[in-house]
Image (cartoon, rainbow, N blue to C red; front, side, top):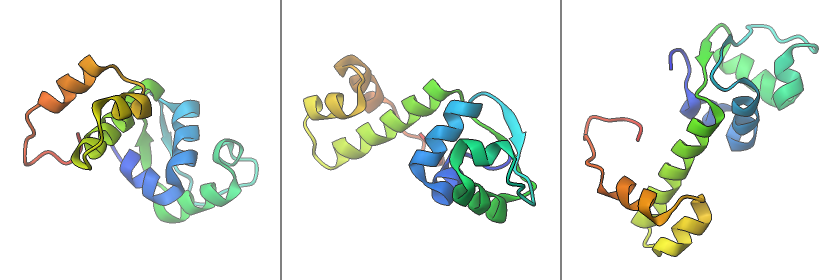
Length: 119
């Protein structure tokens, strides 16, 4: 991704609006307008309040979103690792994330680069 990324979107507009944006524009590139018009596609996708917040914080910035399934997988992985750190049972993690035990075991076995900032 270049420009602003999903973590910045999550902070600016929250998980629900971010999910809607990824669903609508996943895998695509777009620019956040500096001045929002009521007929801009962002208003139709995430609502005027969220779109205004995005424009105020990131107007003029480029966004390249991951495809929807990539975003969902990253979210599931992050949730799984947090739940594991919090002591959740494997079946609870499977139910919460919708991924198999085999996938979870692979994720938990991954070596973590201390310099890595996201997943």
